[in-house]
Image 1 (cartoon, rainbow, N blue to C red):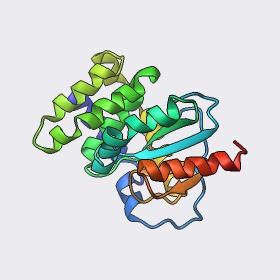
Image 2: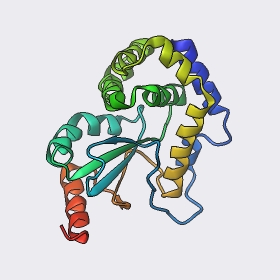
Image 3: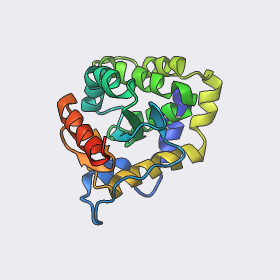
Image 4: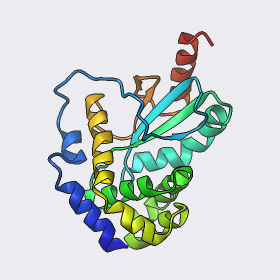
Length: 211
């Protein structure tokens, strides 16, 4: 399992620009609000009036904190009530040998199990950073993915998975993102990622839509 995931990381690192260099370099183009695309992984109703896009990395501890501490209440208030849909996009950060394979693994999960897989990855992040096994971290995510280990192994090695993650990183750069996590509410950047800060932005978006 680890051998195949590290192979996927090597393929991604061989691309012209990694997410790490994208984050380090200031944007040279005007910020462009991120657009929706067919490959998005979405939590919530498709017809929810407010779209929150999150760019995150599985090796970003602030992302892990948000998913562990904020997302449960955010989901209860806004997603479960049909007010918001959450779009998750990968923006891998250092160390790339961990974040790229994790992003690929999440992308290879069954679509309906994507957020179960992200929860497993973020949930195991603290143990990983405190000397835990990389293999155990990946295996817990595979178990949540709705796929067999063989299916995940085959999927993460596909070049199109690398390209998909690169596309998400490119979209983040075009939108002016230089760090994770980054949030957009109906296309507008929100710097306050707290529950209160996001609620304020969501209410503004609802008011702008006449709700």
